[in-house]
Length: 177
Image (cartoon, rainbow, N blue to C red; front, top):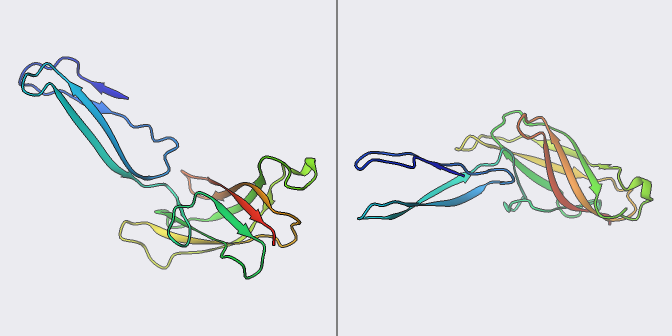
């Protein structure tokens, strides 16, 4: 959405305001452009570019540094590393609960159980230091129940004590091995 002064006398200044809708933006670099058209003879068209970096309230990354877009956890002891890194400026971040809910079918369980979440055991390791940008990275280590009978696709919900981001959601798989 762009707001602007519609009439600007010659030699005077005007104001152009652009609002960028940040809903559903998860973070990272952005570029937005505005083209200003006027009756100026020397430059009737001018392109303004807005660039920036949006820092997420809580960033989720995998141990290899890649942004977490899908989380696959396994019940196999000693199997793949079941970790997720949470980066935030909140100094006392806590994770209250982690649950997994099956999406698109019952995942081999009775119909009445399909809507019930599976609670995931976890531990959280606090950061050793604060980064130069003021953020800290917490390590969330998952230990899914080994008594599950089959693998499931769905969505994880991570409940936190962050006042601006009480829930983190990420699609994924709960792999039974």
